[in-house]
Length: 328
Image (cartoon, rainbow, N blue to C red; front, side):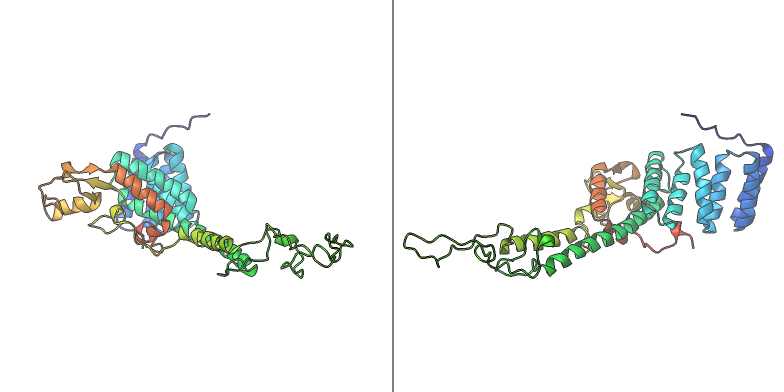
């Protein structure tokens, strides 16, 4: 496999153009900043910082196709780039490619955690948005399939809460709908007659055999239960379990930490508490500093597993229709 060329070493002229682009960006002149960064890229085609800076300008202008193009260039230079994966994820959300967005945002979040980057919370919220939007699509498809099956079963009389056996059989597509299945006639219409008994009574007939494919009331109750169970996974009626929610944010944990007293909090929330309120545990009131915060990996994995199985709950974390990346 061919190795990608290394990142370009910037020339003095390229450095000056980057500085000019940064100045234009700070003044909100994103078009002028793009021009300066583009000139720098022409001098140093594989200089990662200016490519990412230009992508950021395109992001400010919500020009998502150009954001995507620059991020792909950046990731060709450094596939682990946090900003490159993050902004590419945003552009994929804009394209409604939510599965692709989730993969990129997950990569960005993993690398941000490994490097202790401050952008973790922002990435997490966009990751939650991507997962929620994909869930909306998947849930709608699942509901349509269940409704279709439910309608067909209902038309066959198999979802009625009745104690009488259904006369519909398992091979109903091949059955004459006008045929009476209440009695299986073994005598008439087939040119055969039953032999009489020892007394010569030829009018007495056998009791009809039971059709093994008939649905009993228990069978119909099972079908109703199966249809109901198929809808449970996407039900939004229940709240997230308290054990997966932070008492400070009232949201499902994203990056929980545990204190010496055994209490767990969302990292960003408890760190803000330490900065603005005081160096003590919000629940136990015991003295505490940031050094006492230990990542609660087990709780994080459990909470994230629950979220992935109940992706509707991501709507409590993000506003799906909010501007991407917090851009206005």
